[in-house]
Image (cartoon, rainbow over all chains, first blue to last red; front, side, top):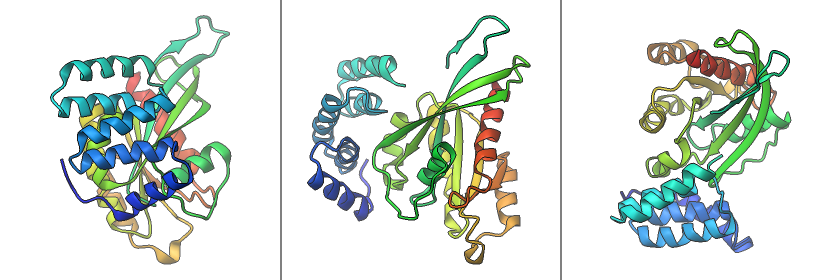
Amino acid sequence: MTSPVRADTALLVQERLRKDGDDVDALFTLAALRANDGNVREGLIILDRVLRIDPRYPGAWIFKAKLHRMQGEPDQAENAQRVAEAVEP
Amino acid sequence: MSVSGGDDAEAEVVKLKICMAGETAVGKTSLIRRYVQDEYDDRYTATLGTKITKKTLSVPDPGTGKVASVSILLWDVMGTRTLRELLKEAYYHGAQGILAVADLTREETLAELDPWSRSIRFVAGDIPVYVVVNKADLESERAIDDRAIDEFCTSRGWPWSYTSAKTGEGVEPAFRALVEKVLATRA
């Protein structure tokens, strides 16, 4: 699941987080970038931060379920999927 | 999708999730902004994460024969190609229609609609697609001719039209056509 990501996306994320460390859009993207680099655990940690800031961030619970599945954590994946079904707009 | 309303006097409300698709900088965010706020900003800012914008419109519902009030949730997503596969479930779960955007001045953006469409359909099934070829105001920089667009879209069963988020040309009719197509598939 690793592939090169356009450098400008990573740079934009850094720039946005320098201005605002709680920028949820940048954090969500950073979680995806980390997972894409193979650091799924770190991606999950960042995603949890997104969900603490905005528990209804669009797509975040479904993404969390996917990352847990990738980690071989079916129970956590199922829990996240259940929350997703309840909160997704 | 949920429907409310019971008697003839009360308009039916249909909720639809419509997802944008297409490469970085084709104008996905600008099209939503033009459609919903009737505004345009020449400065390009790449979208990070996910943005949802709501819009309500009235269209004839082929399923009921009545005019339906349709509340659409427009999901604007990052065009970053390499994250598309990873985020496809997060973006496209429950989607009911796709507005696929190509850029008249970049030929490759049309062909790239195929992998976008595959990702979306993998998650959401065989949902309606409507293609817009955006930046129609940049005719002097055109990189794709009419015939190529028509052959590409027709062979896939995708209706298409030109849009310009900058001038507003074709924007409202394109969104409306997609909504009508989605409603027709429910009929």
